[in-house]
Amino acid sequence: MPTIGFISDLHLTEEQPERIALFLRFLEQCSPKLEQLYILGDLFEIWLGDDLYPPAYQPVLDGLKQASNSLTIFVMHGNRDFLMARQFEKLTGCKIIEEPFILNLEGKSTLLMHGDLLCTDDQDYLKMRELLRSPEWIESFLSQSSQQRIETAKGLRQKSQTAIQLKDSEIMDANTDEVIEYFERYQVEQIIHGHTHRTATHNHTLPSGEQTIRYVLDEWHDLYGQLLISDQNGLHFEKIQS
Ligand code: MN
Image (cartoon, rainbow, N blue to C red; front, side, top):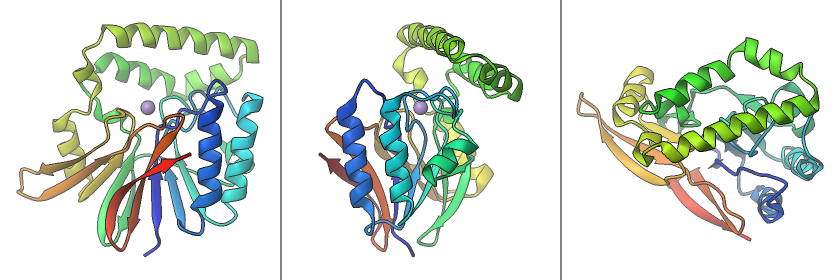
């Protein structure tokens, strides 16, 4: 079985160059240790279309391209960077995967997702998500000029920040019933996700009595990040430091 790494929620932005540098060093060092890397959403704080990214992202795209020569990198959309598309794949050599993505890890069926779909207590967010992911909205957004897109994104961000301030933090966590529902619907033994930034290893007992495990990935910070590794010893977290 290959050694596989999972990371999520790097939220890279031009405003935090240290975090970009940390990620670039990680990419340089992760092969030959890892054979595959899965990035489970929110690699970037914001992605307004493959034709519109700040110059500060260029080294990240180049770093991914370089790293993808020696390992396979899979990227899942998060709620911040769901507009990454074909040109992103070409620029980076990464392969975009859709959620839910199921793979076999050392004999255990494992479901990968960003994690926001598990937060069913936040219905307002899920409604907004449905709108923003619709082909009509995406087409209309991408047809706007760069300036318009930046303005639209700013407006959406402000709305979302105001909404978050008014919400109980429990509302923005994964809903346990929905988690159980995912385990049962997809018949998996493990789920790996990010999004909530509440890293943990949760044990869930299904109504059938079956024991399952859910690994929640941490967000990355300027000076450290987190990697979940799957190898012959099973799944374990590792701290990435600058
Ligand atoms: Mn997220």
